[in-house]
Image (cartoon, rainbow, N blue to C red; front, side, top):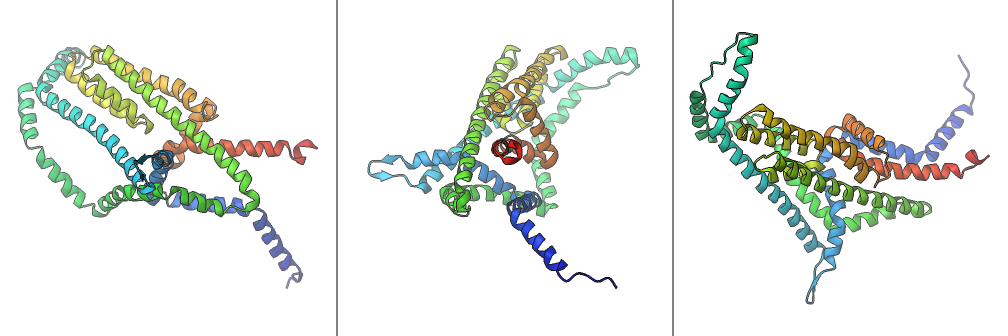
Length: 370
């Protein structure tokens, strides 16, 4: 039987305690990030609400300073006004998008036979010559089918509801998240300063000065990020509107605005814009050659946005090299999917601030200087 020294167990315990004490913040941070990753599906409405609250808090602070006669707006009323403004912006986007979809759907039902005739006239000679295939398509019959289904399209909504009923828990979860978002946003916005104060009170007093400095720098970087992202959205909206108007596409204004303003959500703006533009082009133009310029507008727009505007207006503002911006977007999407792409740049900017302070400490340390 092997004899274990009597002092080995206490010594190992002391080493473990010393290691935990020296690395407690690193261990707590790693545990917090792991828990955050595991709870990400549940935390989605809370994260979105927290992001919106952070963005809107300065506006709420300014509105709180307003007064009407002797009546001064409080934090609660200011929060309600900001939330109403958010709802108004979303409603405006819906009012732009829904009539656009409705008009394109009506045009599709009316012009589908002409579109099919043009496609047949373009493709049938080639297919007949190369493969001996004939397109036996009757446009009048297709129009009749589309018209009948168009009149009974209301039944499709019923089928969707029945299908959704078979996945009741998923539907309930989605509705719960949608309903939970404004509630969480209201309380976060109203009590944001209180939450920040309580978090600040938990920071060790010997670290409060350095922590405050780092947090202020991160806040400044994120503010620059938001300004840069807003600038990209406005520039791309103008680019798409002017580009689609120059190529002669009908409804260039709403399509360009939707494609540009939804650009803050990765892939959503460009995908929506291309689908709407292609549908309108198919209904408006009579040949494939006329549709190519529409695709070129979006192709050039993506190159300009990803290679020029985002690195210059966003990357440089937050102190990130263009290569780092591209890597952050790809890494965020790989690790956390859509939410990762959405948060990649602001999180990278916050990490960059921390790394700058670590570098500064290292350059002034004995390890570097000796």
